[in-house]
Amino acid sequence: MNNKLKQLNKKIIKCRKCPRLNNFIKKISTEKRKQNINDTYWGKPVPGFGKTNSKLLILGLAPAAHGGTRTGRPFTGDKSSDFLFSCLKKVNISNLPYSESLNDGLELKSTFITNILKCVPPGDKPTNEELLNCSNHFENEIETLNQIQTIVALGKVAFDNCLKILKKKYGVLKKMSFIHGKCYKIPNNIKLIACYHPSPRNVNTGLISEKQIVNLFKKVKKIAKI
Image (tube, rainbow, N blue to C red; front, side, top):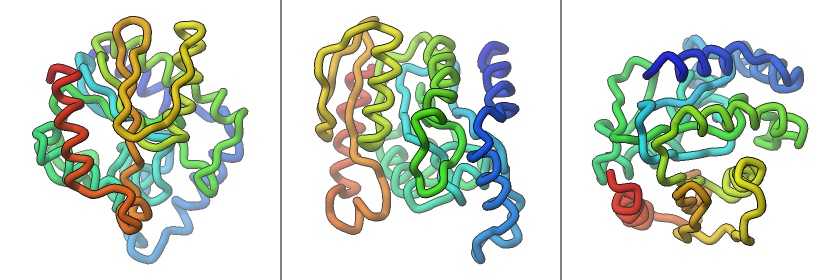
């Protein structure tokens, strides 16, 4: 991680722009759920994770209340992350089939994982103002991770908000609809790929399967050339 990314992560961690989100983080970090009652929660905005020279960016909407907000790393310590990392391990993007903490030895192959929103919103529903406040952090990540060639957006909300930020950066883009597995070309040779969110609901209803997501990330590796 270079100094520019380190400074950006420090800025993200110290951010207190959104009072509603700050209060919610404090609430869930003190009123812990039963299975995490003895855990010490991260309890701050959650910066991204990965190497500065990554070619692939995996993007979610926001850290989970008892996942990333507890561990301090995006897509860590909950059922969605367990499913995602199981798939990433099978395609050799991750060296571990799960991620539980900041010190678990996780390494990613030319991949950076982050969220549009760095703080967990109540009911997983951020306001437009909160998304706007946080968009600057994601824009700075994109600037810093200047070798990114491919973005995989997990879920429609992450996909739609990623498009808003890319439109702001690159100007008018053609209409792009969220279609699982669809790959769109963005200016500056970036490709944006839509992917269903690896949530228990999507898995349990059969919307996605491990085989389906593994196959998608096999294609992603070829597109991103990693």
